[in-house]
Length: 191
Image 1 (tube, one colour):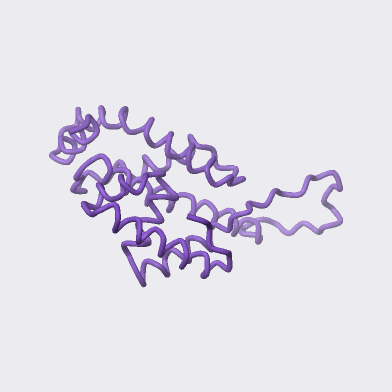
Image 2: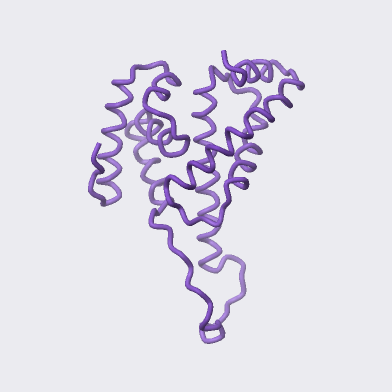
């Protein structure tokens, strides 16, 4: 077993020293996942990798009751948590753009030199909604997409995490890509 797997098991049994060691071991992993996620998708979020990693850790830390099977299982849970962090962030930002609790400022009072906001080419809220719909139709395929998009796990690593074959995960990935492309009104990507 890897160091993280051993620490996860000890932490689950209530070992506080293991919990502290685990924090030191998983934070770099979370930071790498955050960097990868934000770079891979070209998201023009104002969310920085350190902020994403911190928030993901804050949400994972209270989860000592989870039956962590292995490191890949941890990555799977971390991917779900990171997805939730990004979606919550985008929802909050979207609410703020629509006014939220900000005062109304007439357009003619805004300086002309104010640069227009950058627009993220991916509508992550639409992706999240589509993943929720896919999860209702085929939960396993939705989980594969989540792991590929939000943790960067390979199909083989996903198969290991779910104790299934790489061929099964490959079929789920192909199905999900086509289904999501159609749902989001896009041409399916080449394999």
